[in-house]
Image (cartoon, rainbow, N blue to C red; front, side):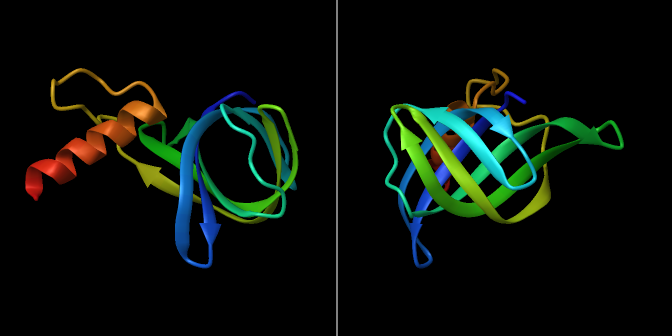
Length: 119
């Protein structure tokens, strides 16, 4: 399974680092993904995967995984799944310029722009 994801490295309830990547392999016990940096072993991590299937054919889904980094080799990181859940997401997220959002990074930028506008 090859889908886009966003990751958040955690210490306690605090996010210490974020990034984006793409899955290489997914099972009920773990996720192997690639990203641009080497992630530290034994770190708590939250992954937000853009799920390819839709609920009732119309509602987008995000698989939210909480786990631990157990292996990191270059740009590939393996995560042991501790908990997981599906959450619904909008399929019509648009950036300020009204172009459809296509990547996790675009979604993050669009959300930041919206927060900036409301501040």
